[in-house]
Image (cartoon, rainbow, N blue to C red; front, side, top):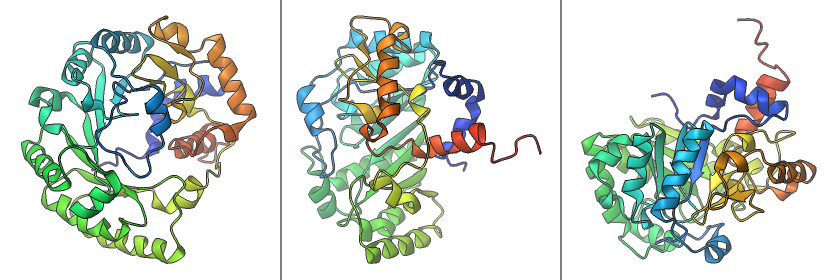
Length: 336
């Protein structure tokens, strides 16, 4: 299986990246669409508590349709339903995916898995993938880290197994490494392998530092998971830079490619900037008039001048690749 999480896929968009490098706003690639800021889990590490409290709404169906249609018109290729909150807390999720299907725009879902039973098979079949955040290998650890108000860990596993058996789409599982769960990495990998899940993604948590001994134990467990049939994708090896927000690139170009819209219609340069100064609101303007607007340019100039204003970023690896391939030509692209 090709690693669908590998940031090297950004190389597929040569023309758009070159426009971004030249300071010309290209057509974005992926829209993060948060249709709910409500959540039925209360994860220990949630970075969006304040933001969700201040913008505690579900996106109405009319605004969902507007966002999807305008994303298509802007040239966006895929919409990731994520959060923010939990997307399935919005009663119109199934309808939202059918609108994506009608407009021939790809869709994916990041979820905590609590309400997976409420998604129709037709919707699941259209989704490119579903990624479920479990972050534990046992009932007790999941309870301690996620504080679920809905169904429990064991019940979520039962639903995941049921969906995996249908083989309707790619089912990936997310695992954020924490001092309270790292010992369960192999345990959950083995469970998911027996259920024929598509893959397990293991990532570091922002602002959570493991001891040297804990990190060594994580690497040992990761080696053990490689013996399983199910692919395990990890970015743990870059953990120190990620959690300490050490920039491994000069300038962010990814924020030209991945807009985010909150459930109240506010538009942000990327998902990492939720709650930062919005660049506009689709209630008031068409998305194509917001993206690349004067306000948008002012905000990006500010972020270029004060890069530490950005939080630790999931797009760091994408920016590294852009600099290595497009700016510094470290791959010597002229020589095959």
